[in-house]
Amino acid sequence: MRILILGAGKMGSFFTDILSFQHETAVFDTNPHQLRFVYNTYRFTTLEEIKEFEPELVINAVTVKYTIDAFRLVLPVLPKECIISDIASVKNGLKKFYEESGFRYVSSHPMFGPTFASLSNLSSENAIIISESDHMGKIFFKDLYNTLNLNIFEYTFEEHDDTVAYSLSIPFVSTLVFAGVMKHQEAPGTTFKKHMAIAKGLLSEDDYLLQEILFNPRTLAQVEKIRTELKNLQQIIADKDAEAMKRFLTKVRENIK
Figure 1 (spheres, rainbow, N blue to C red):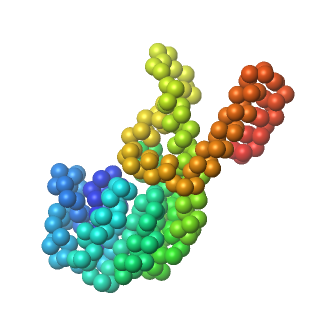
Figure 2 (cartoon, helix red, strand yellow):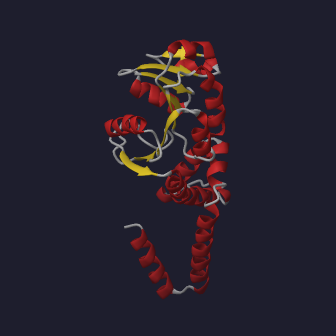
Figure 3 (cartoon, rainbow, N blue to C red):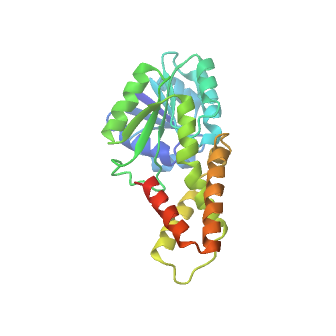
């Protein structure tokens, strides 16, 4: 299959690496410097090159801020039978865009990133495939994600947004609060260092991505849950209430079983 990957960043390079030995692949990036680190693939910087390549599948791996813009740039030079796809963690506006594009599409979300995941061992990681997607597109990504040993879930666009609001906004907000009260530690303990590594990894992500996840309309309800639990814990600490602390710890241990 001829596969065009949009964007030569971390995820674009990752998909190029895993696909280029079994498919004819090309990477398109408007910044030629980004293409220095991709190999075993065509490197495109112009729309004319894409037109001549005639891709059968496009994987949009640009940063979430420019996902739809990247699609709009290349759609005029794609064959009508081409399937377009994204791997964005934020799907805002994508359902409407796809329905109006006139192209078959498949939307998925590999729920890992180069910051934290071990890309050589993804068996404990997950991926979501959007159920409204084209049947053949879904088959392609299911086969691909199975090859990577990912745990695959199929959700609607709506269900995906609910899942992201829960699974990303809670750890993101908690980590940002931790970093917000941080000060330099001369002799940090193990737990502190682990939290710090998570905070540094999170803050290395694109600012727009963090903003879009936190501005998800469903995020505010999750933040309110954090505030409620924090207020409860604050009161237990202020009262030095051993029995209440025991009940609290019992509850949270049940939550993480």
